[in-house]
Amino acid sequence: MIVIRNHPEFESHLGKEIGISGWHTITQEQINKFADATIDHQWIHTDPVRAESEGPFNATIAHGYLTVSLLPYFWHQIADVQNLKMQINYSIENIRFAQPVKVDSQVRLHAKLVAIVNLRGITKATIGVTMEIDGEKKPAYTGEVVFLYHFNS
Image 1 (cartoon, rainbow, N blue to C red):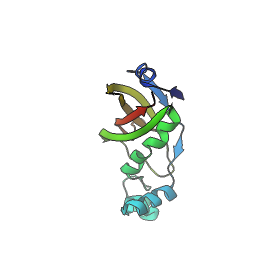
Image 2: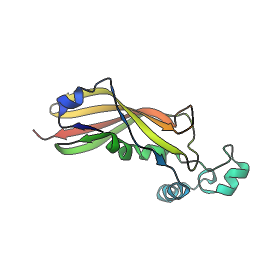
Image 3: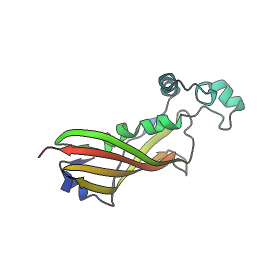
């Protein structure tokens, strides 16, 4: 994990891989809770018996948005951004889902600083993200997440 205390420290990572999170197992319980929270109970996610017999993946799969919702969890494993007044989740851009995440798969996040701008004292950091699936050649997704950081003076 890297520690970042201000804009210049953050900027020193421009163009570099910042880090890789730990692994996280996507369970059926987590999928079901996400389905309840989003009111998306499509059988490919929530019906293991039907998914095994009728589905193209022989198992349930996580919602794509469930995997995206894990971005902050994984990011906080990669970078400890300190000395903050506030952090704002600004945008998620160019997310492309390349591979479904089957139930009980392990996933982790790779993060790279692709752009950083100082907006009159507010750091706008664009992080390139790739969610890896253990044992799969293709990632679950690739894209960018943008955070705004208000550092203390």
